[in-house]
Image 1 (cartoon, helix red, strand yellow):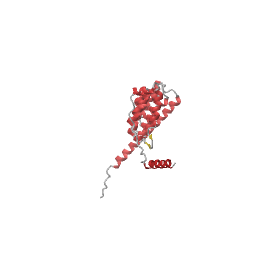
Image 2: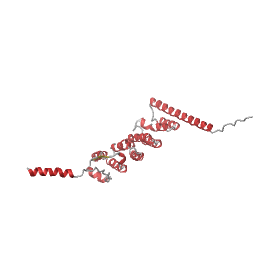
Image 3: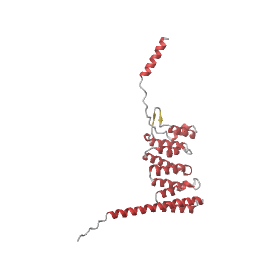
Length: 247
C-alpha cells in the first residue's frame, strides 16, 4: 500500500514538473489531387465533400488557439474549396463559404481573391450558382468599395444566367449598380433592353425601377450643379480686387 501511494505521488509530481503544452498553429496543407479524393470517397463523393467542408470550416479553431481569418492562407483555402467543389459540383457550400464567410475578413486583397474564385466557378454553372454572385456584387460594392468590380459581377449575372433561372431582382442588379455609379443614362438604356427582351413584365416592378432611375438621375443633376457652383465660386475668389483711385 505504501509503495502504491508513493508511486502515485511520484506520478503527480512528475506530471507537475512537465512544461505546459504550447498551442501551435498548424499550417493548412494543399488538398490531395482530384483522383485521390475520388478514390478516397469510395463512390460517395457528396458525403466526402460535406465532411471536408466541415473540417475546413473548423480549421481556424485548433487546440488551444483560435486563428483569425486574416492569418489564414487564402490561397490554400481556395485550393480546398475548389477541390471540394470538383468532388461535388452540385454542392453550394464551397461558394457560400467563399462569398459570405471568408469575405468577412478585414483585408480587401483576400476579399478579392474569394470573389474571383466565386466568379470563375459561377461561369461554369451560372444557373445554379447565381446566388453567390449576387452576394459578390454586394461585397464588391459595399465592403471593398469597388463599384466597377460590382458592375462586372452584376453584368455577368444578366448575361450568363438563362432567363427564368434567377429572379428578376438578381437580373436587375446591374441597373442599381449603374444608378449608384451615377450612370443613370446607361441604366435607362439597359432598362429599355430588358423591356424589349421581355425580362421585365410586371407593371409595379417597372414603375419601381423607373422611380429608382429618376431618383438617380436627379441626384446626378444635383451633383453636377453643385460642382458647377463650386467651380464658379472658386474662380470668383481668385479674381483680382479692383484698385481704388483717389484724387
